[in-house]
Image (tube, rainbow, N blue to C red; front, side):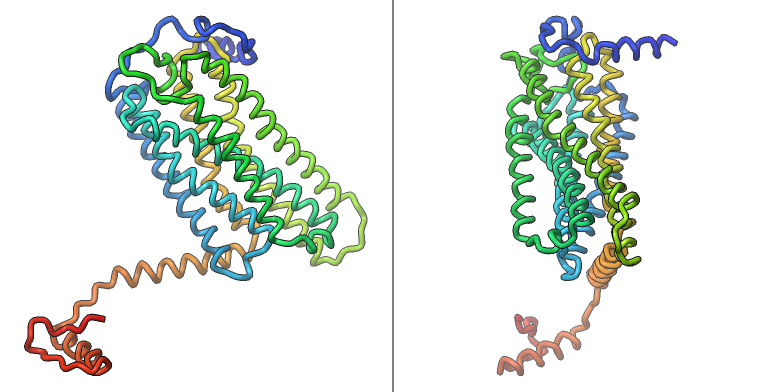
Length: 383
């Protein structure tokens, strides 16, 4: 009962006024920096590391297979698959770069960040850039799917070059407003200077020069612009797509209708994965930067749970791509078989006898008009 009341006390301060003084924002009790410590116990840190490793391997492998399936198969290089390729690239970068840095930041580097200021800022740069990129891609993908259903001729007439320019623009906007701007707000606190919040790691929002208040203002603006507005676009586009598919009577072939329903199914799967990952994390940041007098353990596990949802959504995306498209499944199978063949060939350790080496060297020597003496220790001809 006490835990439930504590939770409601926290959530009642969700929309705390942004003018709250920093002296009230932080708990009166702050921690000194203790090397090698974290709010999580040793075994809890091991469990967190294990789950993040599983998510990281799953996400990296799945998104890499998706990228190869689209890049290596000419028939997969459609305009819609360019969106999926770009989304998979975003998830791949996040899984390879951001996940290991987050793991260190939230476990062994919580009170003892020893990886330098650059890697601290690199984590936030990568994490925010890929998050913004994903949100903008999802909204654009919904609009793109709506155009393909409602105005198919206009959709077919649009060139891939224009789409590629649009995707590059989305990445550029995400890098500037998500990566560069957000990395400005974060820094590594000094050891032993009691500059670390009782709830946050060393690599966090800078506390000096009114950093928390500035971050709160910009985060509110950026969330409205780059998360809630794309969600609104996604919602409206989905409603219009459903209306066009099920409530508009237009003469279409059975094959066309089946294809359009697959389009709606694909959009629904990708959107669901996006909501699973980004709504919890956005909720955490809004909560932790507005609620005064937080319980450090509650704050810690709230963030860990939200981040698990984010990584899990990145693992779901490749699955969603394949569930929604038969061609994607076939291309992915082809990539997997190719990778299997490569791994099998590498694992085969063929040991040539000296006689076999000599015969091979003689053959190469004849091609190069050289005489090969098999009795010599250096009888192999270099290729």
